[in-house]
Every structure is written in C-alpha cells, then in structure tokens.
Image (tube, rainbow over all chains, first blue to last red; front, side, top):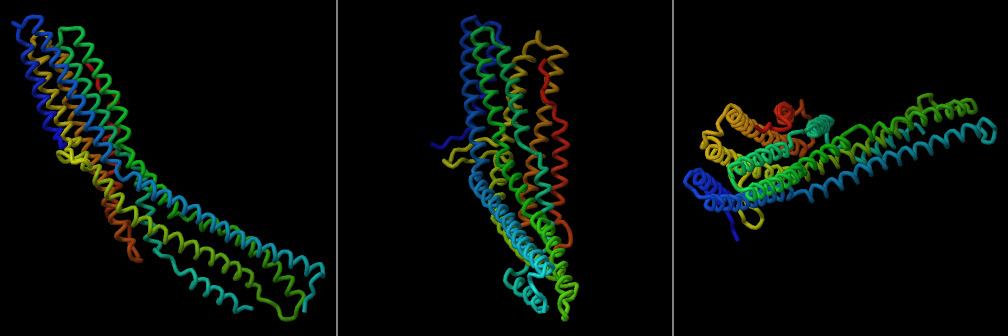
Length: 116
Length: 316
C-alpha cells in the first residue's frame, strides 16, 4: 500500500483545528463538548501515529547503509592490526639480526671466533 | 660485501614497490579525517527540539478540554509520543557516528605510527653492528668501513619503512575509494530525510521530510494556539503572548539548526568525494583541498549554532 503521510498529517491537523474552533462555541452543551474533546483526542492520536511512523521511516532511511559502513570499518581495523603486526615483525627481524651481531661480537672478543 | 647494501636496497624497493600515494595525498586524507572526527552537527539536536515543540502543542490542545478524562488521555498520549521521539532521536546520529568512526580509522591508517615504531629497533641494531665492525677491524687486516653498521641498519629500516608505507598507502587508497560510495549514499539518504519535502521508503511509501514535519508542526501550533488561547479572551495575557513569541522564535532557530546540519552533511560528502577523486592517481597536492577547508568552516559554523540552543524551552 502506498501512503502519502504528509497529506494525511495536514488533513488531520486541519480537522483538529476545525474541531478546536467548534469547541469555542459557547452554545455547546456539556455532552457536545465532551464528544468534541473525544474527537480531538482521536485525531491527535492519529496525528501522533503519523508522526511516529514518519520518524521511524526517517531513521530506517538514514541508517540504510550502516551495515556496509560497519563492514568497511571492520576491514580497516583488520588492516590496521596487520600493519601493526608487520611493523612488529620487522622489529623482530631487526632484533634477531642485532642479537646475532652482539653474539658474534662477544664470540670474537672471547676468542671463540678467530679473525683472518 | 659492501655491494650487498645497494643490491639489497634495490631488491627491497623493487619487491615492495613505492608508496601508492604521495605524502601530500596522505596529508590530505589526514586533514579530512581530523576534521570529520570533530564533526558535531548531529541531527538528533533538531529532533529533540521538535519533540519539545510537539509536546507543547499537545499541552495547548489539552488545555482547551473541559473533560478530565480527555485531558488525561491527551497528556498520556503526549508523554508517550515525546518519549518515543526522544528515543528515536539518537538513532538519527548513528550513520554520522559511523562516518566519524571511519574518519578515526583513516586517521590511524594515515598516521606515522607504524613507521615510528620501526625507528627504535634500527638504532639498537646499528649500535650492535658498530661494535661488531670495531671488533672485526681489530682482528683482520682488511678492515670494514666504520659506516657499514649504519648502512646496514638504514637498509633494514628502509626495507621496513618502504614495505609498511606501501601497504599503508595501498590500504588508504582502497578504503577512501570504497568509503566514498558508502558516504555518498549515507549523506544522500540523510539530506533526503532532513531536507526537501518528502521521501520514499523501500516499500514506496511517502513520508514528510524533517523540514516538512517542522513546518507542519509550526503551522499546527499557530492554528491551535489561535483557537485555544487567542480565541478565548480570558486566556490572553502577557505570559501567554510571550510564550507564543518564544515558541515561534524557537521554531525559527531550530529550522536554522536543521539547515546547518544539512549544510555540514553536504559539505562532509563533498569533501570526501573530492578526496576520493584526488587519491585515484598518485600525484602531488599543493595544499589541503578546498572542500576539506570548507568542511572545517561548516563544521565550526554548525558548532556555533549548536552551542546557542537552549536545553529546554520554558513553558508558560
């Protein structure tokens, strides 16, 4: 079903204001006033429903691409973690080479490895 | 042995390739991300104001009733409607908050953090190699150049930096391009909902935009107030007139706020679109691109309007 909420809302609002004008009539009986109060309330309830539906539709529309955005961010976070791991890996290689150099230095100093 | 250094360097550079983006492109991504991270033009503030207005309108309606049950019914409906609107308002910010998180990740990915992490080990490596060269030279006739240790450590550092930079810039390019489609869709949806007259949902139903809803709310308030308050001479006094004036002023301020939110969102999309256009090809950018500078201005302007919003509108 295709609905046009804005027009419906405008019609309801117009009806409420017409009923409000009618309620200002001093010649109304208490029963008539009560009936008009009730009619205004009914229209206000419809007004609230139309507004709530509109707000919910807005939220749904705005957040349509959120799942895809979240997917992209998960990928970005994983890449960031991988880059950090890569840097850590390079650091490890560098540390190993550094440690080997130190061990070799000490071995040469102690005469365990001879020079030419 | 000395030939190893340039050969290794050449192999490493050939293997890893150069950075996919220039430093100026990375700087631009970083500038966009930093601005987007400080984005504060959230639509929920407009929605909360609108919820306040509608609550006031319902109170005006109820104040005309002569039947206690009818008054209670209206107040109950007003409360439920207000609470629901306030609850929904925070959901209007979700997509922009995600874009902000995306900007945060761009900042992280475009930072020098990964490269900086590589500087420390290369220094200790250089020191250990220096000691080794010194010992080696004291034992052999054919001495090694004293600069060898620093050359090797530079190569290790350069390989690490080149490889990391290559992967970092390739990832940045990929994410900015992939992110652009999503950001354009998200901002288009957001501005369609906040601006224009109506929008259509996935099932083809048409709803009022926030702009139309605010205008309809304002119109209803005016008509209702005229009937309920100005239509009854006993209710017209300074306070009721002052409330009417303040409420209309608040509507206008909220409309101004809505426009600032739309402007900032459009500016965000435009800046990102221009950024994506500028990172498709590797090139030098002379400065921070104009659209990012415009985004900075719009975000600041929206921030100023936001800071002027009263927390609650006074009721008469």
